[in-house]
Image 1 (tube, rainbow, N blue to C red):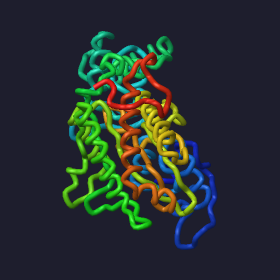
Image 2 (image 1 turned 90 degrees about the horizontal axis):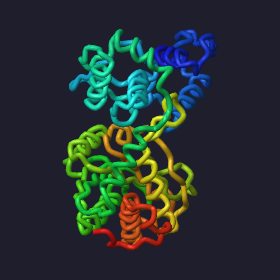
Image 3 (image 1 turned 45 degrees about the vertical axis):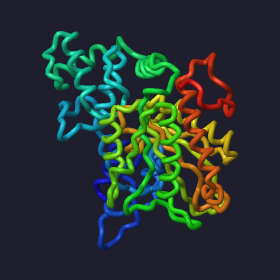
Length: 372
């Protein structure tokens, strides 16, 4: 607990002299009081995490990442232990601003960031060793005031979509039916989330295959166990897919909560404005088609920094299709016709993502097959 409090103080989210009710058996630093709870929730909101006030694995990981500033440590790529942190995100943003393509800003020092760093070092007359040490820090600092602004990664993603053409045939999509194995996900009203999204994934796979799309399912990874989001992301990266779509259903203690929501990689509240522009656009298209075609309540599109959305090299979207804890949504999800319509909505959104503006149709109007 003392470590969590110190990290929150370092980030300016908790006053250094914040007092708590003294426990005779524990020091002040050992208590998770209301001030700490508010600070944790504030941090989770900033980083686009699930806002529950609980310092779980992902929140703790991001608290650790947030403490690093560019120059605090030497940065280098390692296959076995990838460096992660806000200093890496700052480095990526600097490189992108200067025209060195390291992919999107995600705070993960992977091979793409190392290649961009080597290119920068060669262009600046430094030793191109892919290590961001004192001499590279000085060069970046000198150039920081002369090269700013723009969204080069967004423009590159848009150009890639344009160049790939409107036809879906030949494109590669990873479909991730959430949970599975020994993890049923949400269980309510006689339904399990794992079963619902597996059925939806198979319907989606069939439609994609008919259009010439190579669809990979992550469910085959699980066997009898549980596959973490990082493993699902690694699988997607190995396929070199164009897009990833992860299927889920939601739950809430309030039985009245219902509707559909989509999520993309985005954390606009932090210093870097991390996001996947194509993921954001695709999530919006999926959301609008699902709402228009199924009549579900619109819970809108949101940026989140969940591991699957963040760790995939390609744009990824997560769909929360209804609340199994809501009787009306659960009744819809039991219907084969509804699942067919949901699958159709996602495929139409995929087609619209690749259509040029003059060939696109209004939401809910496009019919497939179109550009096979």
